[in-house]
Image 1: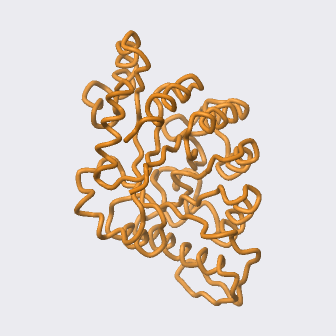
Image 2 (image 1 turned 90 degrees about the vertical axis):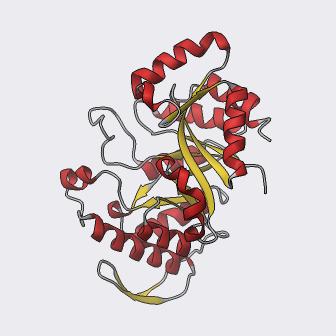
Image 3 (image 1 turned 90 degrees about the horizontal axis):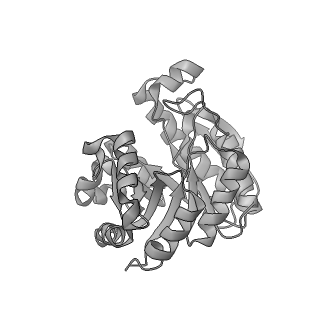
Length: 295
């Protein structure tokens, strides 16, 4: 099994665009393979804060880096027509030399659909639209002409060029039965939610050939003198009971052990969300002491 990849997860909020570029470049220098953003009309539970649009930000960060892959956890299917999303993804794919990955899901914040008038609102309908969108995107990426008739999408003699440079990866997250059907059919990467990690071995056969990733919050302790401050910040944001479940706090040695155990179970990619909003010095230390020596 190849050595696991590390991707920085960084919601594009509470920061300026130059701040995001600084962190993307720091992640690239520090050995991260990629970086993932979020996709919302307004930041969940923080609606009054500044936030940047997902695809535009991805393109900007790709243009500001040289090797870093950029994706999302995840784009919301209901926010875009699949033909437009397919075109946007291929454009970023060509512009970046193959460094864009399409992370997509069917919506994680139901209130957002109500607030902004996005349809369909009901979960059972959103998953239907999501599956149709994946069918359409995959068909458009072939470059062939096709017809499609679904409940939400109807295309006649549809065709798009150019095709992706190679196999443009699709990332789908979730642990529900219908989501896993989409994973098995379309995904290159299955992002397993941390709440379902204890079911990895049970669910793995349902994900088909998709490779496994996880996404979790990390409180990185650079030196033992910093541990108390990191723990205090973690408890303030997540509560004492969340540490070890919602998030992991540890120094380099503890985190190496943590990620090695995940990798031993078949996880090949880690999306790391840092408690301190990915300060460049944190990324550098994590890259040196964790990414550089994970077995």
